[in-house]
Length: 148
Image (cartoon, rainbow, N blue to C red):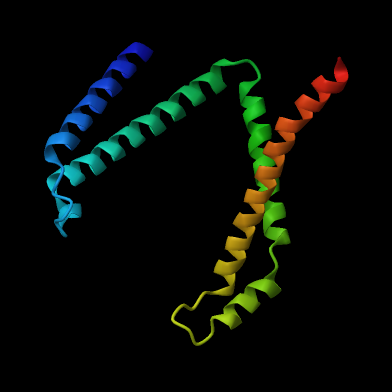
């Protein structure tokens, strides 16, 4: 199955490369973005992205279901993600959100406090996940360094 997918993706890549070579518009053309070549490249990008996403989801779910304890690990990971989102929302301040809304009062952009708080929550989640990723890279190295 993997060989078939690999060959299909190679064929799609070759078709895209040939199409991009022969169908590219003149760089001086102001309407170049609306040309058939660019539209084809965007379509190919979306097709490849959809194929990659569907296959990643399929193989991940298949491995999760067939591996002993895989479903339990996935539920723990999902629970941890929910906890991180709850912490991120709890730490995003409503006062700061209101300050941002007040700053933009009378300007062209009118953000709402809930939107600003949601953005703050997502930033907090990003920082938590980055911190967790860094710790998961550092801790095994430190254990290996001092373990020997």
